[in-house]
Image (cartoon, rainbow, N blue to C red; front, side):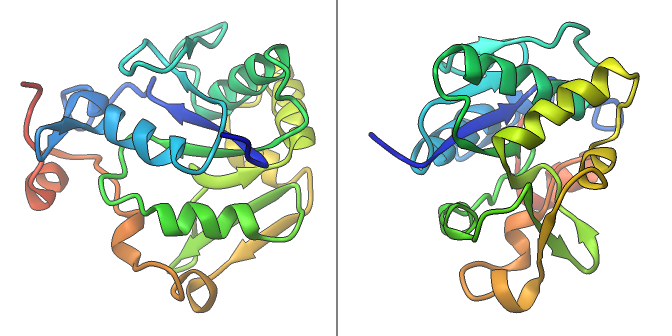
Length: 195
């Protein structure tokens, strides 16, 4: 498949509040890691996993695993560049979104150029379901080397195209952005433990 974007599935979160690795939770028999990889592969190429290797995707690790999503984005961006995909915009998706919608990802791919294309739900930036430019991922690495850990610092360093409900609501619903942080979240969505 030839496409204008690459993809990163972030699977290295600590899942402290949940008490179990989010990537291993299952929905209809499929792990969240495998589901996220499958959905992202439908719109992006190449797609890498940044984390311990929960999927069949090629996995890369941060220099300091557990340092947070900004470090994961920097590591993923460097790995994509090393594989000849450093000129592509990148869809970055956290593993804990069971209702991730391919229509939303296609919408993000088609958005006009910007350093970051970030949906907002009720005013909250969805930084781990967004599109980033190659330059933004290079800046992520610079920020990580300077000791920064917040993805929001990256947003302050470039041009962000904010996408609010009137735009993303044409292709999906707010349920697409629901993430799993607690056992109550997992239960409400109908997720099961690893099989």
